[in-house]
Length: 378
Image (cartoon, rainbow, N blue to C red):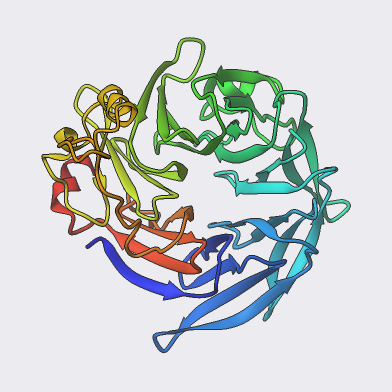
């Protein structure tokens, strides 16, 4: 099985993040605190409790290069925590929000971070040395509802967002004096701050969990209608695919490689999506079980399933292969998985190792090294 270790930290975990060397973990146990644990003598011990927020901490991210923690909360505030000696010292972030902050992520160069909020805005935050605080520029009047997820493109300029208005959008976040105009960012550095590069209307329900592929060529996000969307050639003429599945909706996704995505959500079991040689994406299997060849015949079509329910075939005992008994959800996790984090080392090209956390209070570490049927996609 791909799950290599399971750790019970609390009754419920809202979000989590790892230190640069993966020796410590920061998590929110569904309250207004951030708890930091370190593995000591094969046992997790709580070494710090970060207390500054007044309401539930909704997002945490730990920067790899600068070793800073950023936290956001429903109290509309954000703090950047710097380790000074044995203590973590908070620095105020001026968000200017009138609704809850919902998600946060450091940019690849770690000179900025993005905050999604319930105020229909995205805050792009950067540091002002003169005042010793983090200020923000807001992307306003673009979203029609709460921003549920943010994801940085590898070029440090483009930012993808998802919202409960059902749309996925890509913006330019170029800030003069913060982002250098160099050849690495390409044409993205020519666009103005807040300029909308793309709007995707593929989902007609809430959208969550947007991520870029390692190369930045593919964008993936999920909808609350049990669908996942893949977008190639992000720009004026993108090409999009959607994959529908019969299981419960997803909440977050992670690109393991250019051809494999792991989705997590209400089914309590990570789902594997892969692309074939033609670039066509499909659902492969649950990570906690082996792939079976009869899965397609077992489910049948949605149309025939609707007719089966309409005429009550299951009620009168008529054989119908599309009516299946209720099955217990999940395996390692016992409740919704709401967060998936990469544990990739800098030298590695693929995310073979990652962690998940959920409403059951568990953090599970997964390793795909010995999943031989997935090796061709890594």
